[in-house]
Image (tube, rainbow, N blue to C red):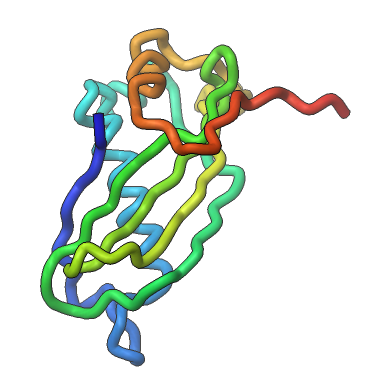
Length: 148
């Protein structure tokens, strides 16, 4: 199962060099993660009701090709790691330009947080199951908690 979304970049996404500004790539990747949650019944209202929130520890972007104004872009979502209980997750987004050429790779490391206690928590079982159904990267690895 592939999970991806298609977007039409807008003028505000461009920089003075006439290509998509660096932070816009990350904005579209974040939008895909939010869309994934919404598509599987975890919209902002449900997350708020559960007092559950996704957080990021790290985000790394590698730029490969320019994206210019005009046409569409495609942003996909793959899992590169999950902790055994689903508390932590790593994802990779690939962004393709209007010619279907790989233009950027974005890697994110995140987790689920209890919005009141501000502590990491295990997500609901059905949400974790949806994460496990996402396509995996070739280098997928279980996330193991490091000892201090």
